[in-house]
Length: 50
Image (cartoon, rainbow, N blue to C red; front, side):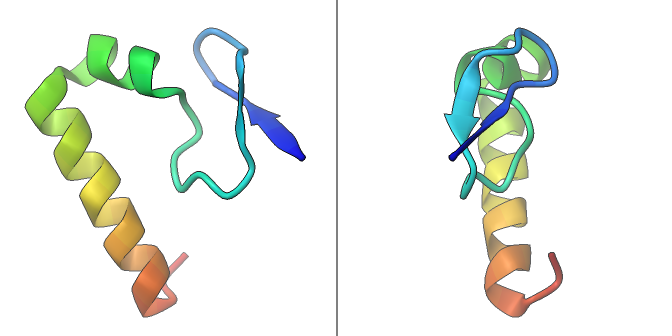
């Protein structure tokens, strides 16, 4: 199953911890901030906080 990117509405994997695609994430926040957001969200899921 897929969910949609909140910016461009493209399909993204339902298991993805963020609600936007990588392309939009990098365009909005830049490479470093996007990678940090992704890492923090994945860490939160591993801890059970999501």
